[in-house]
Image (cartoon, rainbow, N blue to C red; front, side, top):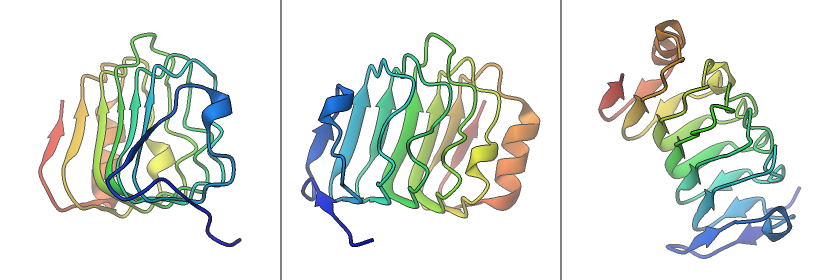
Amino acid sequence: MQDSYCGAPGEQLTILRADAVPSDCTWSLGSLHIPDWSEPSIPLQPLIVVDGALLLFRPLRLTDMRGFEHLRRVGGELSVSHDSNGELRTVAGLESLTEVGALTFRGNSGLRSLSGLSALETIHGTLRLEGNSNLPQAEIDALLAHVKVEGSSSTH
């Protein structure tokens, strides 16, 4: 598949609805911000690389990370935060992800499994796993056992 670029370096693309998702984008040159997502999945299957950050804030109905199956690298921070409904249970769908600039899962009360991060090799910056009240310590330990964290870690 030939790369199809979307966005521009330093630009942040905010996606509010499924029909606003760039359907053929394999490489985002900027950041993607997905706030208050109310669909059960995010249709970003062709996406392979995000040069900037990938920020999911209040993913209201996501139970997993399906839609990101081909994502291999996020140059900036991958952040999933404040799932107040407790719907997000697992990060399944991120099995192709091998490196991120930073990784944050914060305030996702339903999160129980990080096994979808099995291919993740390197976090170039900070790892933050905070306020995920149902995430077992064994899941955190398993992640730390196979991932090189080049920055600091906060896992409470």
